[in-house]
Length: 176
Image (cartoon, rainbow, N blue to C red):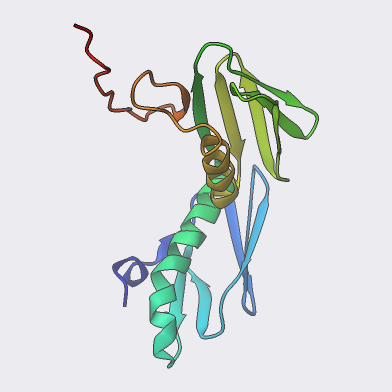
């Protein structure tokens, strides 16, 4: 059994968890999230705690810790939400939100347009792109896909980087 699954998941204030069959739903101030549990895992709510148990199949033991983390992320996301910030560095690099797309000028011969998924809010101001919402997976995946369009290069640091990310800089060519 995973170390995460040994402890019950605490339901924080501002979040309501309900279990119906194999579906766990969390309702909070920011919104509602639902997730289906795989066959063999069962969830129960007791005394303000959620606990997951595994059936007799050994293949589901590997999923136990993963789904505990998913439920913890759902509770936090529904209550407070998540946010990631990307910093765009480079001369001539621009970002702006146009409708349901993130329009980027990244030094290519053409502008890049990235569709914003449902449930994700994107705010672009100067060189800072803020991605927020209640689903941690959707926010992380969208931030990673935007960052992959122009990763920071190690010589001048141009490109997208996370706000708290440190880029190791390399020394350039030496002149005589």
